[in-house]
Image (cartoon, rainbow, N blue to C red; front, side, top):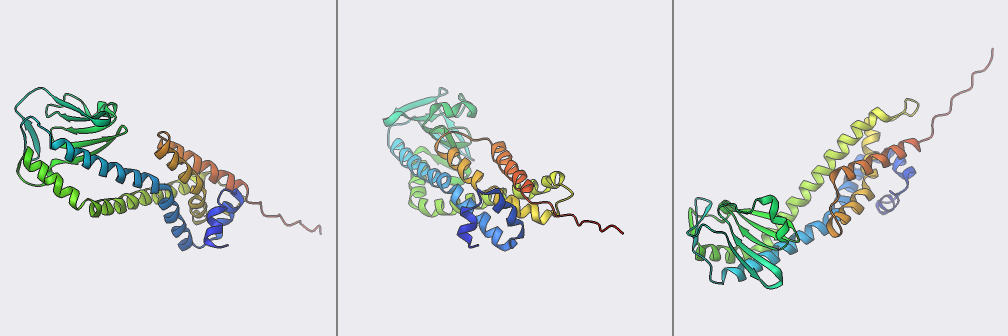
Length: 258
């Protein structure tokens, strides 16, 4: 079968079972393509939210803010009380060097930017993205200097996001290969002795069994609601077990009576 037929027919457990005979190089390309398709919405939405947050941060730093500065990667402010400003579309800007709001409570702010003791936290629809101040460079930065650094960051943001997206994809693909390797190893304990299945066979089958669970659950996680990692594992492993059971048992030779 062609590459596309393998991909489109991985919903069939018999095709997954037959994939144990597929070349491993083709299977590796299959996994990479599946992860590209599965992670594309997540990576794209992350990039879009990063651009939006940087634009909001630029607009916010134009306003009159209390005096603050960054010294050796840590934020300090003259006023002890936390500073909160609300902008358009319920977008919040918070300066909180004393950690009045714990990081666990920040998703409740929904949308905004929080300057904490050692990092800048961007919040988009309850999702957090952190940027350590040390990445901005400089031993000491005032509020105006921070604004200049953010403007510089916005200038090469497309290149930065391109590099980050590649790293995110590489990390997700690496996680997928590790998961496939682990599930194939666990599958050895569930194979029946009558079926001749080696670890190589189970690895190839697992790589195809995770195709649609990965795509469907990843997209649900991005667009609808959070999907726990265990859901990916269980869905793939159940599909692997079904594929293993669909492999026909070898026919036993009838003994000829003497």
